[in-house]
Length: 214
Image 1 (cartoon, rainbow, N blue to C red):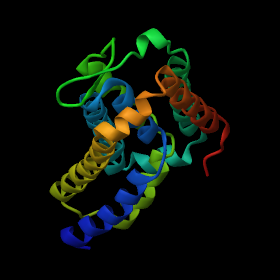
Image 2: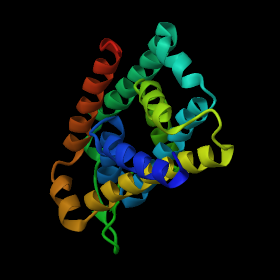
Image 3: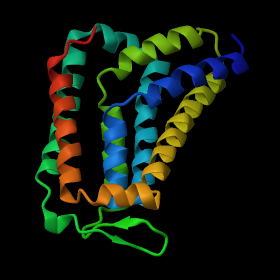
Image 4: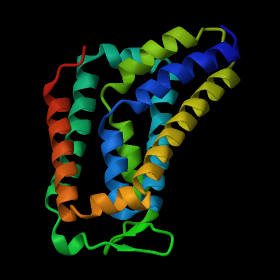
């Protein structure tokens, strides 16, 4: 398989994977609606950077080891599930005084307590890096695309391209939910929005911890 064919295959598969509803989607949506467009874009960058962790260990051949190790998968499931529970609990504990929103001149939402750039990028990074399904996904994907004699440059290109797909998709999600009409409709929910999305995070966290990954 040449480089161009590999890029086409990765694009079709990874775009579908990125678009599938999951913790990354919920987190980007939450950050956009409660912190504004900038926060959503920063969270998207963090998610794309988190993807680099999976790409690196997959390129090194460790994905198959992790995917076949019950202990390793249990550890990743526990860490990932607990992190989702942590985010969810923070969301459902949101108070009305912390969710007062105003509109700036460029129609971005601003909250009373803005997180720092590093904090928001870190949220996205950990949410993606601790995804317990990632090792199995990358084993399947890289088994199709990679070969033992593939140049390291091609592996780097594939990895960077997947990160770009991830970033572009969630940037589009951010731009959608930061549109004035869409954003205003969700603002009416106030702090209840944090609680709704927080509850979704908790449900996903419990599902990650209790579901057996085959």
